[in-house]
Length: 256
Image (cartoon, rainbow, N blue to C red; front, side):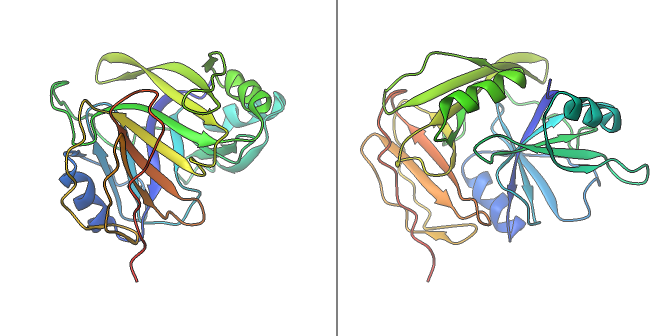
């Protein structure tokens, strides 16, 4: 229903610092098109694409590609889905936005904005193997109903490591299929949208400064993560050694 998954859009005040940050984690840059009027870059670990936008918007945004958005926007509205915005004039790059019951922004765009990056599956970033995108919610029933209408399949609710509901859908990237997973959480430990990677062991994080006001990462026993302030909606990155390990995140303290 949403189309082909494209990227997780992240707003940044300094795109150069953001690009350097992800390159130090082992991400590769993709060649981008001149689609957006603002500075834009795309980084990938071979499994997930992060779109870095030096522009203010609801961040992070899950972005999909869908054809004929002018017509499709009307179709979505006829199905009872309210659009957050619709930009489908003939002279502009067509895009529409929606928000799930918890306020997570979804964007549909008319065409790709970067070229594929051939990258060997064996080449893993320092984060590890991308697992899922999680977001907080106070109403599992509403979240499940909304995301199932968007083409995701919900699994059973579970309490490990805390109450959450997993939703999945197939995605295709560079000729191969994989499952793009969303986890809806009810936990004070995840108060913002979070990108999760899994790895066999925690590697030491040597850098002390990241983009968007982050510094001094502190190590954790079973999970390492750092938090980025992205406009009014923060986003966190998490790398863990066990799928059901309770997050004990590295704390990224704001620059003074």
